[in-house]
Length: 143
Image (cartoon, rainbow, N blue to C red; front, side, top):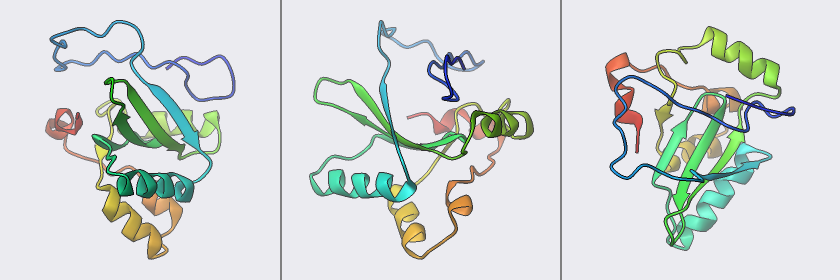
């Protein structure tokens, strides 16, 4: 992860054993990311888009952020996300103490189930905590 300011990352470079080389390697932009101020704001956007028939192709808890990935009509990828931690230092601490080395991708989640938990008043820390998965399930988390 590379950064040039207070954001925990502006550029992510991934190299992981077991990842297949894309049939058509991407050239240029991989995706745009937009960060929301709160989980409630992110979920309200998901619901608004869902009501218009626009669904994410991938919902993933990366650990430092919770993300919904969409494709526009031209196939460009858009990530709508929230930061889970309140500082770059907290993100770095998470990297050092989590299972990130074994699972740099994250864990998929069901958006509607997350909304139900949110509406029941489950604590934010519980809603955003990344579950651990077995190492043999990491690649299955890819879209």
